[in-house]
Length: 528
View 1 (cartoon, one colour):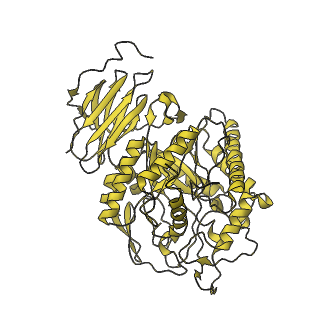
View 2 (cartoon, rainbow, N blue to C red; view 1 turned 180 degrees about the horizontal axis):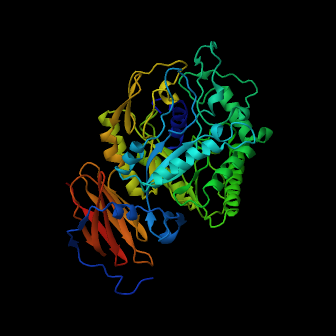
View 3 (cartoon, rainbow, N blue to C red; view 1 turned 180 degrees about the vertical axis):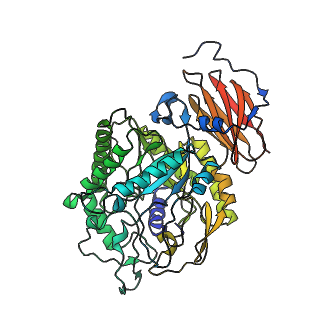
C-alpha cells in the first residue's frame, strides 16, 4: 500500500474506464412477529459470557434464502470482519536499518478483539513455507499455529492467506543497476521462494511507480501459470500441506489461495491457466483434509486476477463444484490510483460476479492511507456499500505496517519519514508505535451482527452516529443473534421477533444477544 500498489491499480483503472458503460419451516405462530418493544437488557460483565458468545465453530457456505452466505454450525449467518495481519510474513528488506515486520504481541490480538473483529487475514508466504524445493518448514508452520491459537483465544477466526506482491523477494534489481529512462531499479517484495523464481534473465527494472511492471515479474508469473519445472504443482502441494495441518481446527475459517495474481497472458490463456491453478488447489486441499480423521472442509477463498473484471481475470464457471467456495476480490476504488470506478460501483460489480457463481462475497482487502477527511469519507462509503450488499465481511489493509515493509520503503535503500497510516500508526524512521488510528477503527469496528439466525435481509450501520438496523429471516432453528456494539454506553435496542435480550460487557464495547422467536426479526439501535 502507501502508494506502491498504484502501478497495477492504475492499469486497472485505465482498463476499467472502457468498461463502465458496459457494466452496467416454521409454525403459524412463528410467522407473526411480535410488536416492537424497547428492552432494558440484562447486563453481564462476566468474561466467560463473552468467551461463549464468540466461540468459534465450523463454517460453511449456505444457499438458503437464495443468497449465498457463510454460516456457522448452528446455521446462523456469520460476518467475518477484521483486518489483514502481515506480522509473520517473509518480506524483502530494502533498507538494512529498517525491519519489514514486527512479531505479534498479546496487545495486537487484544486490540483486534476490543474492536469487535471476528477474523484476521493472516499473510503467510511460500518462500517461508518451502524455502528449499520439496521441503516444508515446520518452524514457520509453528508460527502460523501460534497466530491461529492467539486469535482464536480471543474469538477471532483466521483466514490463512497465501500472499504475494510482485512475485517475491528475489526479483530485486542488483545493487548498482542502471535502468533506462522511464524505468527504475526494483526492490524485492514477498511471495515465492528463490528456486521458484524463473525469469529467464529478464530485466528487473520496472516502469517508475509500477510495482509489478518489471519484465522479470511478468516472466516469473508466466512461468508459474504455465507450470514451468512443475513450480505451480509445488505451490498447490504446499497449500494442501498447510490445509492438512489445520484440517481439524475450526478456528481457521479457510484459505485464500493466492493474493492478487497478475494478468500477464492473453485473456484465453489466462482463463485457462488460472482455472487449472484454482481447480488443482481446491482438489488438493480437499484431498489433504480427507486424510485427517474428524476433519471438515474449510472455506476456500478465491480471488480474481488483478484487472478484474477484464477478460481472463476469472476462472471458468465450471472450475469446481465444491460447495464451500467464497469470492474474495479487493476494493481499493477511490483510495489508490485514478478515481475511475467508485467504491459502490466496484462493490456492485464484485457482488454480481459472486452471485453469478453462487459464491458469497468477501472483500479481502480495502482501505485508505491518510488522515484526510475526504479519504475517511471514502471509507465510510465503503462501509455503507458493504452493509447494503450484505457482503460476508471484509478485512481492512492492515493492522500495522513497519517502516521497513516494502510498501513503506518502496525503493532501494529508501528512507521513509513521517507516519505510516494503517489501523495503527508507525513513526518512521524511528520505528516507534504511534498508537491506534481511532478514526479508521471507528469505521472498521462499527456495530454489526457477528452471527444472525437464518440469514440477514437488511443491514445498515452508521459508524458516526451509532445507528444500527438489522433485519433477518430465521431458519429452522430458534437460535441466537449476536451483535457487536462498540463504545462505553450500554446499548438498549428495540426488537421485534426477538426475545431474551441481554448484553455482555467486553473490552471496547458490548455483545448484545437475543433469541429469534419469529420467522422475521429486527433489531434497532438509535443514533447516539
